[in-house]
Structures are given as C-alpha cells and as structure tokens.
Image 1: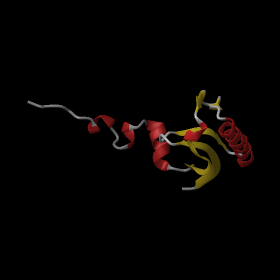
Image 2: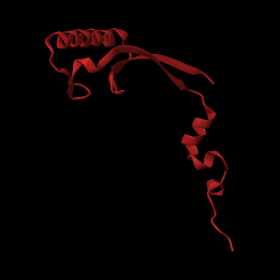
Image 3: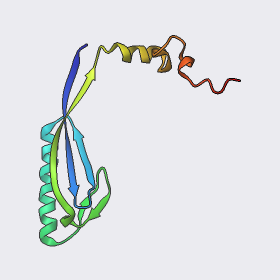
Image 4: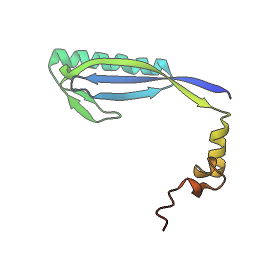
Length: 113
C-alpha cells in the first residue's frame, strides 16, 4: 500500500466568541500567504479607524475587528491511499458486500417467532 501525501494550507481567522472562519484552503503557500498579508493589513486599518472588519469570500460578514484573536496559516497534509484493497472492494461491490459475500446477513433480521 502506498501513501501519497500532498500539502495544502488553510487560512483561518479565530474570533473571541470561539468561531473559526476558514477563509481559504489552497495548495499554494504563496497564494495563501498573500491573502494572509491582505487580511492582516485590513485588520490593522479597521482597528485604527474603528470600523467593522469585512469578509466577502467565502463568507459575507462584517464584525468588530476587536473580536479577532488571530489570523493564522495552518499547514495540512492530504493523504490518499492509492492501493487500498478494502477501498477498491467497497467501490466494486458496494459497502455491505465488502464484509460478507451476501450483504444482507449483517442486517438485523428482526424478531422471529
């Protein structure tokens, strides 16, 4: 079984009320870092000018910039298992049939009198 791993990066905005906004997920660190810089600059301006912080993509929202505790880039690892025999069997036969040859034997037969 071979594992194929790819990196992707998530741009997250953490708020004081516990909300975490996934602003962007992309394979390109440079793209995510560029958006991070834009958000950071807008956040600073909003704090100085005391105006709402606006997000227009993927959310359409505006809130007090004081609610932001952190804007963070988080690396993530996508892992796919290319030669997984269980996965292949499930796709070929269906989920129930991967366990036993006749899939209805895993179902509850109900009460028998």
